[in-house]
Length: 417
Image 1 (tube, rainbow, N blue to C red):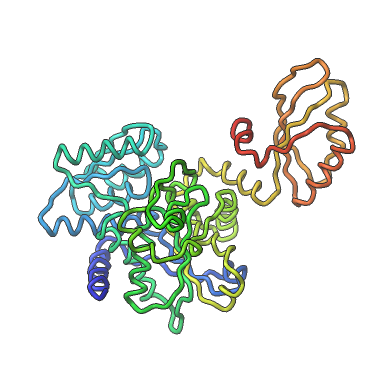
Image 2 (cartoon, rainbow, N blue to C red):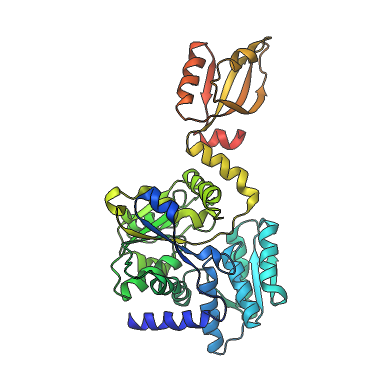
């Protein structure tokens, strides 16, 4: 372990030529809300707005010291691509970045801006697996160096520089009782846990995954790495089909109960809250650690010092409407109904009279007029208090309306909303 601390120290020192330490900030708003001292390690303030630059830098730095000159290759539609591009420009080395054809133009443009003339972007396939296969084939045929996103000792070592900085920056007299960190492929969590252990820090760890992509938790429950057959990629910075081999070796000592699964809709409430209250822009993966504060028992947070790793802030504002929608649904402030509406004059007015003073129609759409007397209507309603819906549904029943709440029906909502 001392060798690991020394290696991380070398990586951290070398990293200073690229960017200064990211901020460690005590957050008053979250501290008051959680009833403890909450510190945020702001990796969203790195040059590429995520911690991924650390692992990419350390990996390429080591290859260059071995006389390997590149080109360097990766497959990514997000933070890993941007980190690699920045590092390639820093070292003046060529990089080839494979991205799915479906990658948003904003991410392509940012990656190109970070890498400039030193990178080439190739758009291949509709899905990441196709893109990754093309990158591996290119590396094999051209003798290029594949830069993995998480499952490599040098990547883990680079991500562990976050931990070294945290312990250097911690205010005098503060020893962290708990560290909350998001897990995707596991590189960041592996680096942090290894560093804290090697440094003799007694902090407890809470590992956080999106509920729709529980790769680590499922693997811990089974006692071996499990490849998820399907997973939700809404939290694209932390949604992976399978935890890394090296990273699982590091994290398998933790019980599955130590992994918190954050519902994607609830996560959206944290993204919106941090944006509106604190003016902090977080991507879904970057908000995971903060959202997981909600799941800590009072005894695990009262009077404690808790460190949350804010892993990234590359938020695509084209997703803002979806995030707001999901946040409202999570808080019980918005519902979608399908109504069987009578086809007669005054029927809509009768329904409007059933609404309460805080209820607002946000969507109204005829789905089908299959009969002369009735038609199916999709209606979205937003309110100020979740309890208002109980009264509305009671009034609809009392007035003989046929209706169905499809808010929690993923299949129906996915087709209609």
